[in-house]
Image 1 (cartoon, rainbow, N blue to C red):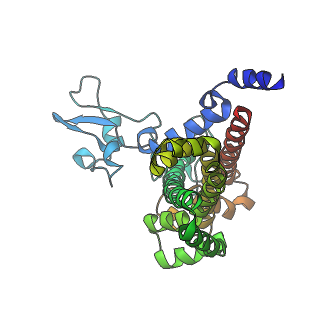
Image 2 (cartoon, one colour):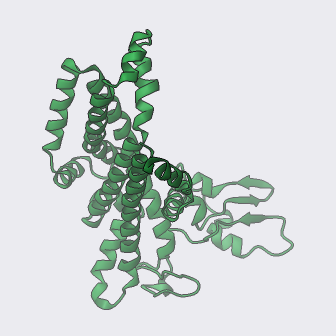
Length: 333
């Protein structure tokens, strides 16, 4: 009698994306993906002397074009008159991560800058938004690559067994011998500020988690009655694996991805805090935390508190998401 009650309770639950942690995760993803369009000192769209320009979108592929009339885009925008034929649409937060103001050197939170300014007069909120782009871009790419590679190898090892299983497990054991932080430090010293290099290194460390989870689950699922029946009906092994078994592992893969995402954000922030890695060339929460810790004794609390809160909040969000996905999957069994 208890099972129908559990299933009914699970069915009444809100979808995960409508919960508080789901909304926060979606907000972080939006900030990371759309950072140049949310916080920037160049327009989203501008018309200059009859010609259209999209400087903020160009920021995705490099540097935006220079402003008109030897002015910055923000200076030009601020001088537009009511009757001007030219116009510009600025981002919701019209401050760029590299925009400096010497008058606001280490200024605390204010109405114009709710999170204050850093040691170069840059807006902390704008840097936090672009720091989300760095964390989501590097961490998400590494987890996605590790998930694809690890899931593929784990599926082949757990379902095919034989020499494939032996080779994959020996590779897993080799990669598990490397301490994550020390290996990242070593790789960063060789690769320098290469974002692609950091993504590949983190993916090479995280794929083992996906491979072990998928292999372990498939070792059990491949002996279930419905698999034996499918084989007896003549269904191909490939279709059984990818169309019948792998969809059952979505929750386990999602839980592993959430934990790996938290580890990737911590790893990238740690490298940036130590002054190495691609986070030095862009806004990074670890880089902001290092700059804030250098002046913490002077009382500039806003320079270290907000990046610390961002790192802690996102890592906790990943862990809570993993726990929610796992508990919902358990209730549906």
